[in-house]
Length: 124
Image 1 (cartoon, rainbow, N blue to C red):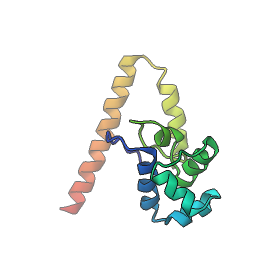
Image 2 (image 1 turned 90 degrees about the horizontal axis):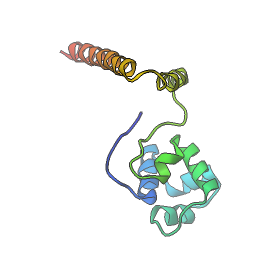
Image 3 (image 1 turned 120 degrees about the vertical axis):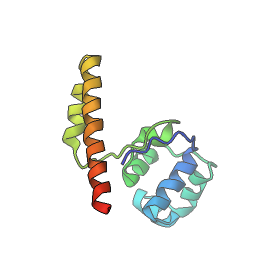
Image 4 (image 1 turned 60 degrees about the vertical axis):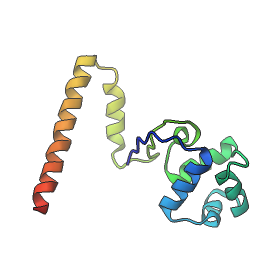
């Protein structure tokens, strides 16, 4: 799932949020990245900044991009995606003329709207 939230969170706040989403304690997260709970607490309270190596381990543990952890206003994008072939195709689509990109976005929006309507109709 992609989260395009515009709220700026510190790195520590992001770690807390992601850890709680997974339902992990600080000690459980520490075990997953080869650290200890006290160190996780320091990261979460912004007392220390994780090294690049630790950021990579955190990104892997949380299945999110390092960009999301390290920078403001970056979307939360999974490292592993159920349909990786779609990502590859979207990278190619980025090279298309602007008019073609707009047409594809309209088509994608139509398919999403159709799915939402279908789900809505099934609940009635």
